[in-house]
Image (tube, rainbow, N blue to C red; front, side, top):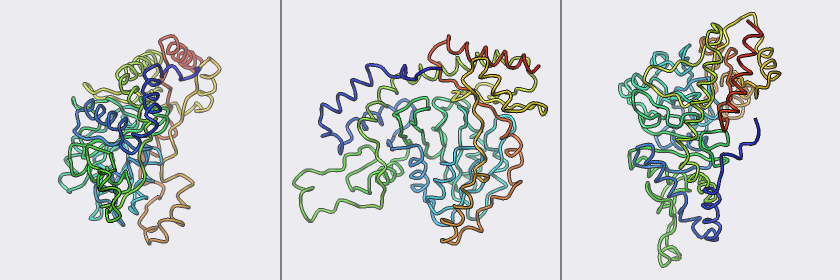
Length: 400
């Protein structure tokens, strides 16, 4: 597959030119960010949205805004990007890993329930590969135990669960705008929610705790006669510098206008892959419950033939013209960074012994992670989709 430049057109250029023509005067007022936030919240059916410089800082701010702090526990799947685990650690909190469903590959609500302790503060529901987690029981558990719920929608734009868009069910939701996502600003992200107080807290966290930053505005400067007064105190809260640059927001605004088209292309690509593996009993696609919508960040399958080597399948697929298959990440608690985390971060603050990373804590995830194969769904047209699907079909025929 060639360049992904096809994702951009005159709309991005026009919005970027608008920012440049302003001389960045709007940078501290957040004009382009404000437009992106407003349109994104509207598209998702939420009241408030705040842009960020990554889909990792969004998670950090979401947890912090929900009150996650020292020694608290946050339940999360181990089958996810390490950012989810790290964002919990940034709060001086402890990740607690719940196992996954063997068919959807998503966090198992029943194991969430088993992992709750008096120190549990929040649940992070990661909508992996484009599919929304089983949110009804997750929300029931959360309300029973007075827990916050963060939805990580980095890989799930417009996926639905029982008619609800992923990201509109929990207390607050995060989307990533990294370059591989359905919608991209190169790097970036956004948080959205319905509660004004929560959104106000998020905005101040995003912008160094500036007094003027609110749920609906990133503008940090007051009138000149106030802002230029030596007695004026700018910062009312503790915060970080997580704002999204105006140029990136301009790109995001144009991308948002094309979001339905982008998601539709990925769904079409998934259809081609589905046809390619039809009848193959050892290639099991991610299960999407009837009536739900999978937005297919990737087309994820479980390869269950124990007599075949994962890399042999991948290499044959490439030989037949495919773009390559991606493996699932190593489980978070199996990453080599764990020793460094315990030694340099959790150890000095007295929490290393609270962080359970023993083998066997999530047996289903440990079994399935080595079996997962992800096929790209970011093809620009059906011609490219057919190339990928045909390569996969020939690969399966070769090994049948």
